[in-house]
Length: 226
Figure 1 (cartoon, rainbow, N blue to C red):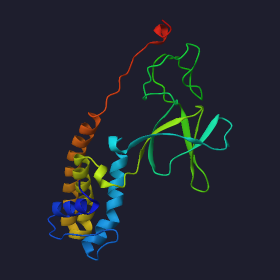
Figure 2: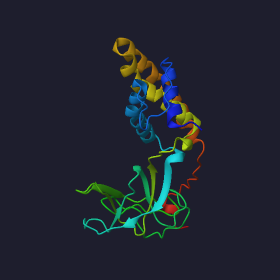
Figure 3: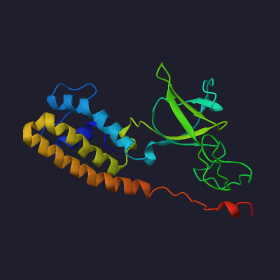
Figure 4: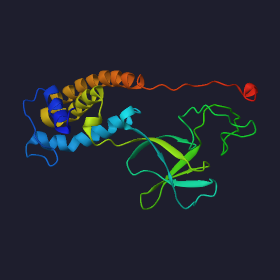
């Protein structure tokens, strides 16, 4: 699998640059290595946020903390490596769509929402997130023993899918074009690389989405108790 240095060299190759960097952490000393060290993490983390990639999704039982917002019943500390919250689930949910019976008198959504009655239906819970003065992110919800499904920062490029890797290389190339080529030619090359990145991003998203399957059971309220 490609390393961060491999991805940087691929990005440089997209720009027609013959330089080959051997290290970006720390940078080896060349201008190309300095630029790659500056932009690689920005490109990687931005691309991770653009889609719920399978390789960056994780599920974890949340650690409860002291409740400071009485409008919600529970408070939990969020993982430090989180990018996006996908859903807050009951601890026994097999996926976002849990095929389990919810009593007909149990509202799935309760806080500032009109009650929705469901059986074997969509179970993610309402929540909100706030950042404390020390930078800690706290998730508030009414779900006891909440389980979080989220995307996280993937530091190891060996975990990237091949299409994600090629998309990242074009995205990084679009950021490197200005500093390396400069002027109008650099701006034009950055635009070309962004267009190529968009093409590969569409393919990467489609391929990634095809590798998951969720069975959704549609049950209308008036038949849920049958």
